[in-house]
Length: 279
Image (cartoon, rainbow, N blue to C red; front, side):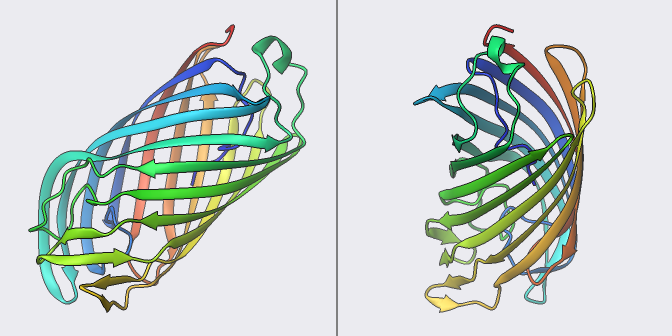
């Protein structure tokens, strides 16, 4: 639920983000894990970096997120009680996005005259299996597999409103060390996001966010499981500029409907510092 993922940013700018997220409910890093009666919590500090650049005359961005976390709680997995209390790294992500239409690469001195109309962009995010993982446990902070998420996004502005739509496919490699010594494969998870953003004078903005994701049926040692997803979430985001270089973001998300997997609430706070690009 990431609003303004395809907004235009002046070339040459750098962003450093630090924050903290708290989640509770039926959560797991793998959304297709069949958990019920969950009473799980995670506390996750994170740090991220982003850089805006010129890609063949188009506005583009690279970003990466590193997080650690502590998870504790109990749940039932296929009717069997399980418990977990663990701290460690979460799988980091790396992403490149390019706005292919409606967002030319601009320097800061030219950005004030830019007015967004329609932006069409695309991105590719890679999730690396570097997080904490114990094959003797069902729930972990890492997933022990690579993940790839190609996405297409559309952003249309009617000042002071902006509507964004994004469609993505989450693709996964095989986990050969799944719980119980099994090999686990998972079909692609297809997701859509919708954001309605209102921008205030002075740079503050608020967004209403929603998504829906489906697919993701898994198999264990070649045997298909009854865990196909059909879930949706709802969220709110508020961004407040602190000064020319710093801003604060508050966000909350919650499950609306859940067929299998995750059903949780998340609240978070992030601080962003920007520099470079003539700022």
